[in-house]
Length: 219
Image (cartoon, rainbow, N blue to C red; front, side):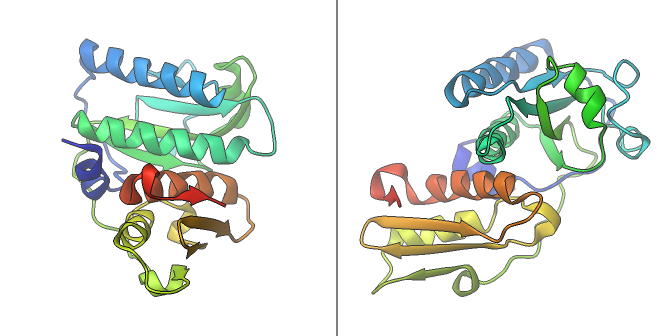
């Protein structure tokens, strides 16, 4: 499965089976995490079979079979949310290519206890990962015209990028972003809010995947 195929197949999955993650899958996930940590200066960590050691994953998650998850963390900085969102999008789609499912949870965890597992870095979310009880369903999406504008006739890469951005997971599925394009320049803005940084990173990754990095430049 390619990343483009994974992007279209990925849906939020809130309930998981008891099937454990194979050792080779864990190794691949940890390698991808390390690559993202190095590239984006983060401290993301994969937790396995964790239901007692860290009470950060609350009963809501435990009741849904969540035992494996990424702790999305890094040193506190103004752009931490965007970097974690970007890396998180990469990890979720990578997991999808391995036949796994994911769920980004931004509010249903203890920041204090999960931070202890990553050296007291700032934690902005946890991403459940495992074999879903289902493959989830497509979230409701806005129209491309509601979230984008291009000066002149939009090239195909821009339209593809917007379509991909609409597939990105966002907090409460608000899709509160707007993409503007002129020539080969693109500007992405996001309505300010608690999760706007993370959401911007998620959307940015998806837009790049859909449009192709070589087709445009961020403004």
